[in-house]
Image (tube, rainbow, N blue to C red; front, side):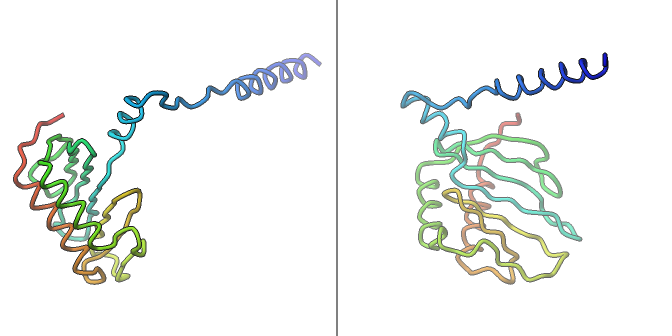
Length: 158
């Protein structure tokens, strides 16, 4: 009987805690909304590992033109770094994504070869994963453009 009462109390407490779940904070002002948008990247690039010496890293480009770079393996900068790009470079990337009709592309362009590196590009909340043999020239050109921009930046380690 004593165990039944204790079990009932514990179950009641758990149900009470679940019922009192806090609601999600939603932006209430224009500045809070813009700060939220700046925290979500508008463009991303990730390269996976392979059975060789592939460069493995993740890049996030934000609307305020800041860049977050995480070097993981076979790259010069290992760790998390920040930088920013020019308005011209940012607009050039946006135009490249739009010219490729990125939002209407399929989500994957894979060859089925396991040991080949996979690249994932993201733009406007859409991601496309590809391997170079199966990708269009436009996808490869966007990746090369981002890589070229990354080489010319001065990075600050976080």
